[in-house]
Length: 319
Image (cartoon, rainbow, N blue to C red):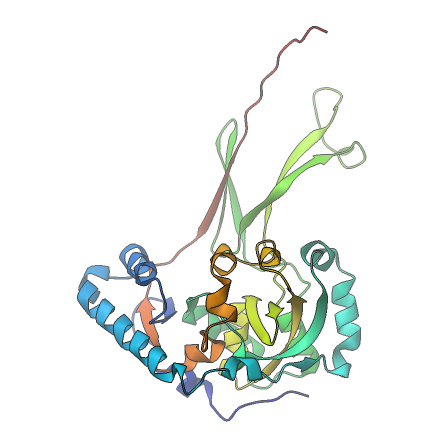
């Protein structure tokens, strides 16, 4: 069963800014201050006109607000109404669990499919691209049915983002995409069955492949005690929340030791876990919808680039 709030999307984010097609939504007031200053300086449109002092003042006001609500909302994050996955999604969940992307990604900690309460998910990512969220809202529609919602949260289809590959030199290649999820995966030594169809001017002994692609793209979170931290899927979570949906299908891993966080989430969480899992009032997904905590920043178009180079050394070795 889908649960919704009464907040329409237009009020959730406020009016869109005029100008470039991309707008970044930042959570203000969270340390370190230098992160947003660096982002604005390197990415924002007309960064000089924004004024460093004005930006710091906005950050300070949001930081004061966080401190003011810390007492009143202490422990609120522990009261999330996360629950077992709705029975209607059982077959879809089994399909995801059988997929290689799931098996390779979630092979370290105890894992379950759940319905998580979006507003009370802890967040470590401080910004999302509002323009992308609005495109996702338009594509998903105002009232997605159950299967559509599940596949939006836990898709198995390949990403639609195009990737351009350019040869820079004999031993250098460049992969480029508008999707910032583009990433290096791993090297792979291919056997003769996998390379049988390759053309070559001689018999092949083997092929070393360098895999570049995208993440598993599955909405997932990490539970520590009573708290659940959103690990991946920030744009999709914000899209659903903007549509008024309060609970969403999610893959939840459970960590019981600090060292386990180091192999399952971003370094900033593993380095300072007490900020997220022990502080009275950590940042939560619902904060993205609080006018006192967010700031809209027009940004220049960005792309992710992955450059791959290799070196070959041939030598004669005597026994």
